[in-house]
Length: 316
Image (tube, rainbow, N blue to C red; front, side):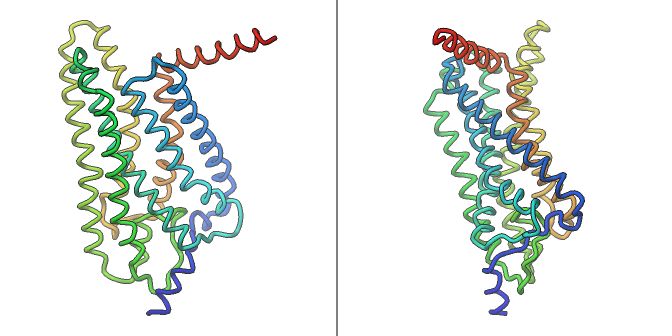
């Protein structure tokens, strides 16, 4: 047993989609494209928010945090995925797996809480428009963002070591393309009931509690919108929240399905494709959702573009 447990420190084999070799090249191209789109889109939002003073508002402060978070999340998982998809080597070191597990759990938790914070911001904007700047003052924005980051990393600090310390009796093959908690728990050769109970309890705090706060916020928002008499006013208020609502639906739909079900009912094939969805698709479409439906961002893009164009003409 000691020899088997020691062998797990040599690393893991990420099986991924190796049972479907015809898919690997296709997935490599798709994942690479989405990764580049994620970096480009989220870096654009961060740069625009820094360059345009009109975007120096609480909403864009939180959006910058979300963009930075998505860039970190994808960079912590996709390069290893691309490496494994490209060639026959499917291995990952024990340290590499531990780091990946820690940051995937941490950043996923941060996003759950951050989306709840953004929902509160939208509640203040729609339901308390005259007091919005007083309610969402810079100090409160910083505090709420700090709570989001500390909650996610604190949750991971508890769950990642517990998951990695499970006896695996020499098993090294992870039936996944990432070092994800459900897949690693499924490899254990001991009863994991207590760990699953702990994971579920923390998930209530990290996943369900923020979701409840989001639903409450949107309940108040819906009530406020219905009380607006003009159709134009209702449309404007709805557009203020629609982008965030779409992002919440995409993110929470996959997360709840994956992390709030018992390990013995966990389907690896479903888990792989759902993880692929929220790892590459959601972070890449977030910038599109916010920019395509947001006139402030569109105006900022035009301003930066034409300013640079004018500088070039002046130089010539």
